[in-house]
Amino acid sequence: MNDFHKKKFIHEANLMKKLKHNSMVRIFENFEHSKYLMIVMEYINGGYLRSFVRKRLRVDENIAKFIFRQIIEALEYIHSKNIVHRDIKLDNILINNANIIKVIIMLKVTN
Image (cartoon, rainbow, N blue to C red; front, top):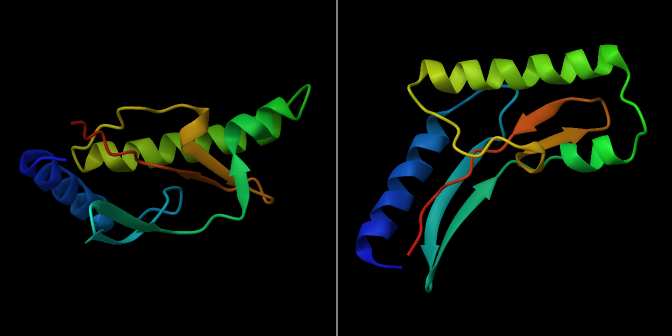
């Protein structure tokens, strides 16, 4: 990874650390280790929303509304901070056993 991409990664990770919302995965720390850039994130006991949906033939309407409301609240929060989620999809949303979701903000840094 060149210096430009490394600086961009660090800048975006530092922005993500400042975001605090109940429906977003918390970022606690970012650091460089050897030739890798690392992010320490909140652990969510559960799985991806994609797996949750695929395991069910039908998601109850009230559960779907509850989940969708949390996603919208997370997106409204980041938009209020002038941040756009560039990859919102079921694989970037985690859900626990109580149907509480956490949106993952992915960094888009390429070589």
